[in-house]
Image (cartoon, rainbow, N blue to C red; front, side, top):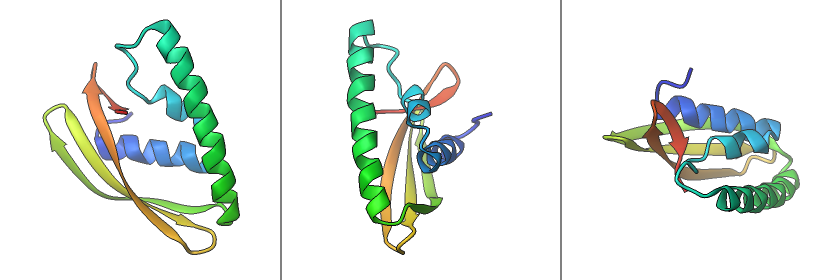
Length: 108
């Protein structure tokens, strides 16, 4: 169960590292979008994920995904993460989440 934004970020990291990009897309807040917007968004995001996958392979894949910090402001949260690649390179990023229907969803 995802009880915090950090838990949601860890789930995102697990999906990212295992290449389960469709699961990441399911974590995105699209409840206010039309059916057509959702389908177009999914196609776009899958294309982006596949492009990222190619870049990650150039860095010898994923080695580790870490949650660095979390800040919550009501129904919005930011989680700072670090990705460590197989070649030793590191990237920090901030994921933004929104609480909807009791679930932390990625906000785009």
